[in-house]
Image 1 (cartoon, rainbow, N blue to C red):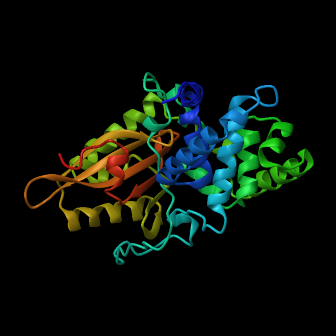
Image 2 (tube, helix red, strand yellow):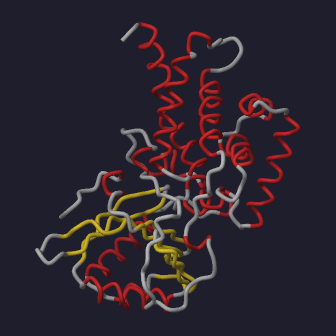
Image 3 (spheres, rainbow, N blue to C red):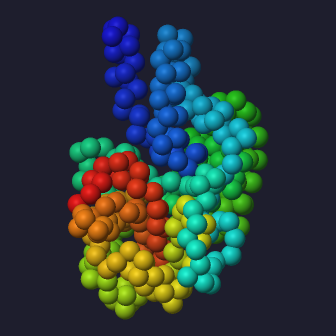
Length: 323
């Protein structure tokens, strides 16, 4: 490694986590975001000898590269939805659970990828901001890529209009116009950052601990008592979602009938929200990875549970494949 490369890496490494958050907000995929950051760093290194500290800050320069990498990657790409973004809620909890693997589903991202390794307090993590929560990232997918970038750069990262125009290669007037359209669209979706729930509190975590205990007991009535009346459950890659405690309870009852009542859950965090890795006991007595579940809690009740039926996510979350 050359001295110049060492200098570049010393300067760039402190920005990797926030660039990952930026790319995730843009792309809606943790896997894709990591690839986009790698491409950003490669492009930045290749042009580092042409970087002029007098013309731009190093952070702004990196964001210009990262944003353009994202915009290129998103050209012609389909938006990444959750099931609730594809149609009306289901009413039959017994209908077939057929995955739609052709849909590029929104992915959760573990907080551990976004927070400093020394940070033990979720309230200090980059990922607890409303802009990282699943509902907000899902709503961002409705925006054209350049509007998405303008809103993130201005409202989330708080770059000035001039800095944002420089990053996007646009005029401040064009940036402000894109920003206004993006804000209006998010308001239509009731998904502006201010409308997203606050970061999880100790009481929220205790509520999820009670949910875990009830689930591991296969106690459906106890689970139901922890839910908001209009609770939402969705389970990508299955394009189904349900609303209300009755449907939620009926579906959980079906889960126990299909998979048995023997489950274990490991708490974790994703998108600044409480989450769990769920394991189901197989015929051999081993508990195998089943789903990553990401909760939204408000007013001392579970408002939503996004159940990601993708065992490959356990590696991303650094959770064991079996217990």
